[in-house]
Length: 405
Ligand SMILES: Cc1cc2nc3c(=O)[nH]c(=O)nc-3n(C[C@H](O)[C@H](O)[C@H](O)COP(=O)(O)O)c2cc1C
Image (cartoon, rainbow, N blue to C red; front, side):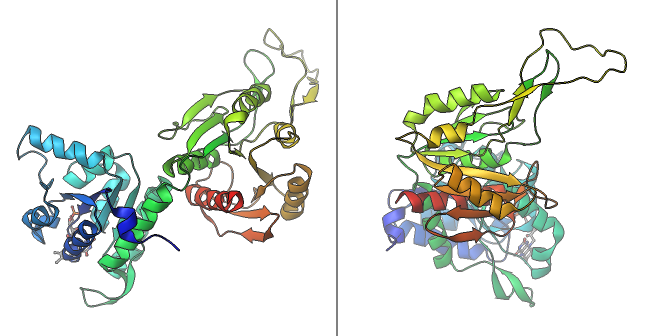
């Protein structure tokens, strides 16, 4: 049985951001429920929100100053309560207007809510509430997609009668539902606490000479998403990465490498400290036998013949160890996906295999989305719908927890 909200929220600190929507009044009830469950709450409001409900209401309910002005106020005291909100265990924007969601996606920082969101490093939730046509608008949906891809959790609006008179999706869920969603997010936040997760990501890169190399199209996004999700859930994460353009996720120890042999050494060195190894890296199968010291010159019309030797098989080496962490592998295939993935799952003695069809348009390499099937020994393959790589990372780590229970 899951613990109650007051078990989870007692002693926690929540930053509640309120925007200018008709349902702003529900934020006051949410604040009351959060306080009742034992949480400390810091409130930030957009100028729009203050047209619907006053800061005084939130100040009285929270017992703290409300961050409602960016240029006026109590000077250094104001900075203190912004700092304090930045330390919160979770930030929720409820109600989140179409306008503020667009500004968050754009990275604007010219009102208290957007400033706090840009400065905040913990888990973020948004609860959009608006007219049903605003909710369906492609611009709004694109902004939500951007925010989701950055790890923001979206509490879906309810469908029903809206303040504007129409019926459809767009209602802010009731405060009790929001309280439950906050509790679940905080609970999930800690479910990897005490676990050490080693992740490999990106392509490998094998030099031919001082200027050329053989590599592949992996962007590293899947592995970075796993590292980010594991760190957000309290794991101690080491990310062994081939060359990518991605910044290291917050709180993750990044170890960079180029060649398969270097990646292998980093994995083997860090393996004894890992409870889980997730191998998302697209490890090259072949490397030039000889790396030329000087740039290879073109010899008229003569073809260049390269001898490529197989690279170390890191997964095989790890799976052969008597003591090994829980092992998650990826199979990126362009044909016979399930059969090839199942075969690799058995051959490499994996605990979990993530099969990834790279032939489908719009998913896989470089893309923000993916569509995968999870293969494990204890159940039939589970085909997940297409979703962002961060959401897939969450599902994979949920399975890892089940398998390690
Ligand atoms: C009566 C009224 C109700 C509104 N309700 C909503 C709403 O529920 N959701 C929304 O996205 N915008 C709503 N708006 C529009 C926002 O108030 C407007 O976009 C404003 O600029 C939002 O500012 P903020 O995002 O900085 O809070 C409403 C406007 C009015 C006048």
